[in-house]
Each structure stands twice: as structure tokens, then as C-alpha cells.
Length: 109
Image 1 (cartoon, helix red, strand yellow):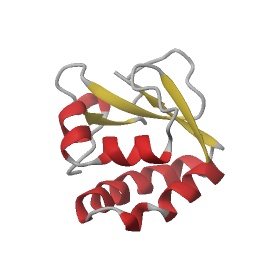
Image 2 (image 1 turned 135 degrees about the vertical axis):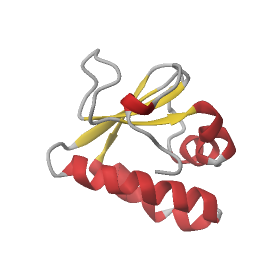
Image 3 (image 1 turned 60 degrees about the horizontal axis):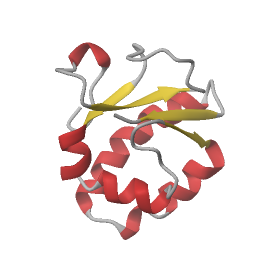
Image 4 (image 1 turned 180 degrees about the horizontal axis):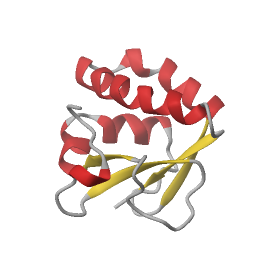
């Protein structure tokens, strides 16, 4: 993966964690996807997510439901190629997540 990694591949703790389902107070789950804060900012995902989820808590937990994700993905074409490339990588994980859960959580720094 170019933008995201799995918990076993992380170096340090400055990551946003995308976790399946509702956050249960457990961090670095094996099936989570992580993005380092440098990649988050440099890729444009920070701007994208804050535009699409204005109440995103960059230091706490934000839950994203299936319907909300569908709307978010519809707006991706308004952003540059890097954002779309990173979202495509994340979207594969999201599709897998929605097979089992109705939501996913974004855990901030």
C-alpha cells in the first residue's frame, strides 16, 4: 500500500487509525488501516476529510456510517489525483468493512 499501512508495519504512534465498527477503546487492531500524519497532510486527505466531515475530531473518535461514506465518495472527483488515489486504497478496506459492519471509526492522533 502506498498511503496506508497495517498496525504491524507502523513506525511510531503518529497515525490516524481507521477501525472497523464502533471504537471499543482498543487501539492498533490487526484489521485496521493506518495513515501516518505526514501522509495524511501531504496527500490532501486532511483537507478532504475535514471538508466532508466538518466535525471530524482529529484527536478523538469519529464514526462514519455507510450512507455517509457513499456521499463522501461521490465528492472525491472534486479533488486532485492524489486524494483519489489514496481514497481508492482506503475504499477497498471500507468495502470489506461494510460487509460485516454498518460503520467504521476514524481515530485521531
